[in-house]
Image 1 (cartoon, rainbow, N blue to C red):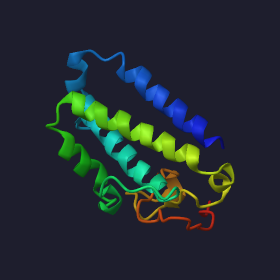
Image 2: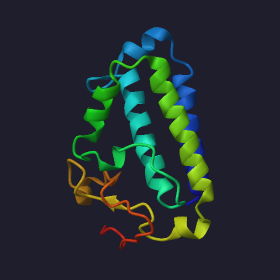
Image 3: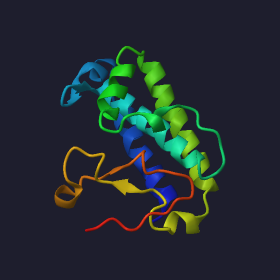
Image 4: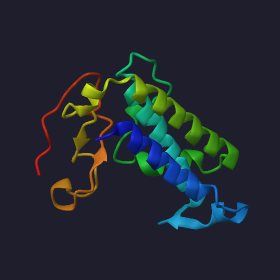
Length: 154
């Protein structure tokens, strides 16, 4: 896997979508009960947490306490925290966190990215069984500096 490419193209996809939004689009329901702004807030929070996880690999400081947040309620909790933020603040958090993700990701050696378990996956943190749905999410509890876990069962 070309990690930097995945991160770059993922960000490009999100940006190409949100760059087309008009001011009224941000208040429309985009996913379940979340507006487009709520969804971007969730993505921003997740990106902040991901940057903090990657920081542990490059001996950089964590910039939030989101790695300690309850993974079972993380999505809704963090969307709620950002609900009343102005769009500019939500957008800035998302963009700034992605810059930090890329900076840390570039500093991690390619051979580390290739190691099984570098970014671990955990079925305990998802609402549904990963063994039947393959709906896996990165586990903030399992992300520890330089800890490698065995490959997840298929």
